[in-house]
Image 1 (cartoon, rainbow, N blue to C red):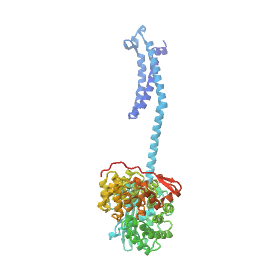
Image 2 (cartoon, rainbow, N blue to C red; image 1 turned 90 degrees about the horizontal axis):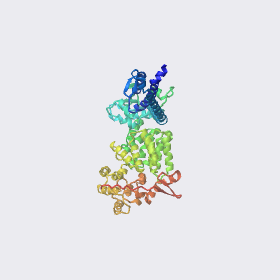
Image 3 (cartoon, one colour; image 1 turned 60 degrees about the horizontal axis):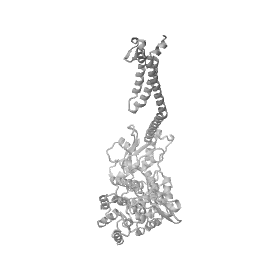
Image 4 (cartoon, helix red, strand yellow; image 1 turned 90 degrees about the vertical axis):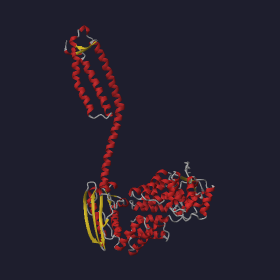
Length: 625
């Protein structure tokens, strides 16, 4: 008998086929299943190796042994007449066919079901890796191109010179902001670390910047010593440092030197032109006394502290140097906010307008005067909103990094009922200056007026926890009461110095808004008309009229121009459908803007000269009194 015939008789060839088909199927299943259970990468390879090692022993086993009815015996010990090798061959043939069928089924499932899923997972994983790498590179580039200017330490013998060292720090910050490609942390964010025992590396990590500029200022008479050093916060190394001993008259030249030294040190990451300076500090006043007073006045304006004192200081600045454009700009800005901060001893609006126009005559590139002129325009009723928004847009266009310009434009958008646009501007303001509490508070107001009560209260509480309590706080009283936080509302009202005998009446009205003709509202309205609470400026007479149901009196209130957000107060659902609501908007000139420029999402035209706004759904929650 030939070797081939003997291999067939002993089913060695069938064993080889069965083993190979079964091994292939097992390898495929293992490659799919094992990763699902988190098996290590070496396990599928081990399966392949073991199966390969078992191939020859399987063939030897088939050659040497035979399956019989009495069990496995050596082929040599089985008489030919008792051999069932042919029956075994048939069973093996069927087993091979069954295994092949399973292999084909698995192949189809793998190709048309499992493979697309694996490819999708692979694509997603690859995309995620690419995104992660791109994000890492972008983050690294952003950190390489970013800097925080910490408040310079006042080393002068006179502690009152702190304003001067702070002013120099901010002057440098304002110069660096103008460098293309360089991201500069906001003043409020950087200055929050004053007098804190935190290292530069930790501060850089908190602010998300790659570099820190710190230093000190010593001023004595007309002499000034400024030490500055630039720190690479990523690699913890000093890049550059310098000490300047100069006359005070050289202060602008020192700022120019420091700014250009920083840009030179960061040229690689900024990819700026390597020939010549990229920033220039203009000596916009030669009167050093005026400049020192300017720094002091600006510090008061930024802190919104002693606004009236700041106005007088700015007036002194422009008296000393009538051509100091930034002095006029500061005077305009301080006057623009004076009345909203409770100062009514003079005509601040007229002075703001005069100062803003003078600042623009001296330097048309200034941004803030345009914003001031917009705020001045708002004081004349009915308001010319088209002109107001044009002035706001001009302010933002002139300086896209002026956070206050975005804030003031957002307030106007909110007055007009465009809360989505207000939120966008406020988000930009917060992006530019994350620690600008007034931007955060006004975003809370915009969210509240848009009906997003819980996010609004969350932002309001965030501001309160940071010590920013009074500004626009009264507008959150209704939401606090309706949420069940009556005690918090009472404590907040205590900070307003409101009359205690009326607090309960007001809070009860906010807890259960009723129709204007109810007995409680009639009594409350009578108290208002009698002058019991007209003196309160924290809440405003117009808002009292609204909350206590005297809808027809809201538009007649003398403070309506200072509380133009009142039209969008959601605490009184019935007000939205009242004649008082339309009277308020008409007094403010809002419908004229809508007819010219389009309506906000919640309102639409009705005929040629009328409009209607969506009703407010009443809050049906039961509130404990």
